[in-house]
Image 1 (cartoon, helix red, strand yellow):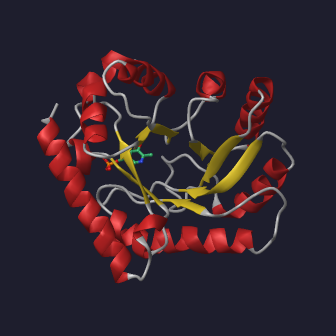
Image 2: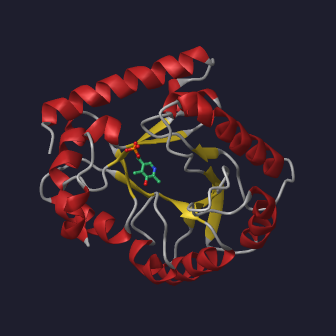
Length: 244
Ligand SMILES: *Cc1c(COP(=O)(O)O)cnc(C)c1O
């Protein structure tokens, strides 16, 4: 793990870059939430980021998220907010409902139905985003832009899930400008769906932008950026075995 001091320095750097991006496009810093993506980093790294003032964290796997939440209780007194940003399987829904602020990765009506059912059982309403495969990469999860409206309409009939917006994972690139078009497309899709005035849904959240391209995403309207490497350093994928 990188040092707590380095995590603090990295956060400060990311914070400055977010502020600069907001300033460039006339947005308020308050309109952008930084999600620190802690996957494959230990609870100690989360605690170090929390000590430096960060309180929103993202994980891409349910099991890792839940065990880190349990682990962090003993080493950090701050109240943290967790987001599930990775692909969710129906059989893991029961383990995550009630444990996160927002599920970013809903990509089917069937999955939304499972979240609805579990939320009803637990007497709560779960906020979700729809994941959109905006770049049409074959390897990516997500709804196609063409299927999005229909899925939004179906989900809007469910009582215990609430769509709050859209999310996308743009292609990996060394050149952030090359993803601008995808961020624009996601924003356009969200404006389009918003204009249909569908009951029970909101398009207020746009979750897009990662370490390599979050500034461009903010310029194109991101409200939530998901930054891992830029805060915690390169991930060690051999650590996967710790969390399964
Ligand atoms: C890992 C991950 C991120 C963070 O990626 P970095 O490039 O390390 O910032 C963001 N979003 C999702 C869905 C991820 O799985």
